Amino acid sequence: MRKRIVAGNWKMNKNLEEGKKLTSEVINIVADELNDDVQVILGTPFIHLDSVSKLLKDSPKIGLSAQNCSEHESGAYTGETSAAMLTSIGAEYVILGHSERREYFGETNEQLAAKTDKAMEHGLTPIFCCGEALDIREAGTQKEYVCQQLTDSLFHLSADDIKKIVIAYEPIWAIGTGKTASAEQAQEMHADIRTHLAGKYGAEVAEEISILYGGSCKPSNAKEIFAGKDVDGGLIGGASLVARDFVDIAKSF
Ligand code: PEP
Image (cartoon, rainbow, N blue to C red; front, top):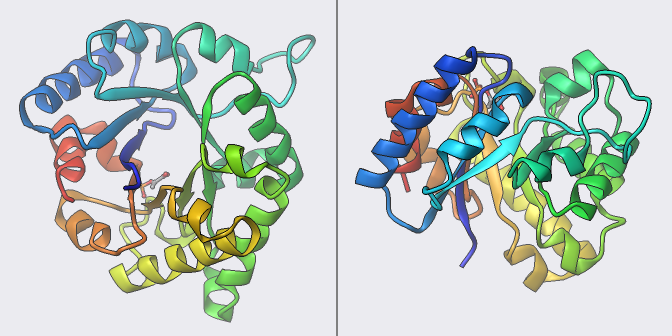
């Protein structure tokens, strides 16, 4: 059975004390209320990772993720953070290709292929984001667009490596807008992504890859969205900043 995952993306929110408080709240609620069959992940700003990692030491049910990493190994890249640095402080996952990084920082499919390789070389699991803007959805070419993102950034991987990736489908028009894809729209795209993966790697491999939905997911809509047979959980932005809401989403399977 595929892993069910609910990952929070805090983005550039919370100072360190606030981030530690949120982490402790999530730890407590998860310990009391969550089944072992859901993997919860906290995607914190770089500066929080070390402290959050220490808080998570006795909470094996909760993983730790960065929100980006460099495609370079080390060296003169001012302001960048390497995959090796992330693993050295206990991060296990890294969100790659979030639409905000693509849009505001110009990250390309090719650069994301290099970031994916570097992350995996250092044992990080990429949570690889894909998704279309509103004009693409309105033109009806979202499937081709999203599949091309995956082809360009991931299809150089071996079958063994692609199985380790987590994919997050995040329609850009639904991120932070309060506008959610319908459960049918989410399931349809997740099934298209899985078919695309199967076309390259075979059905058995495609069946093993967790595909998360992201875009205004909340406790009130998570159950319906997660009911899709190809929806294996969520990448959660705004609602991951409130412990109660975040864990309630993780309880929505
Ligand atoms: C995100 O940015 O990954 C996201 C899904 O944000 P939100 O849940 O706030 O729409």
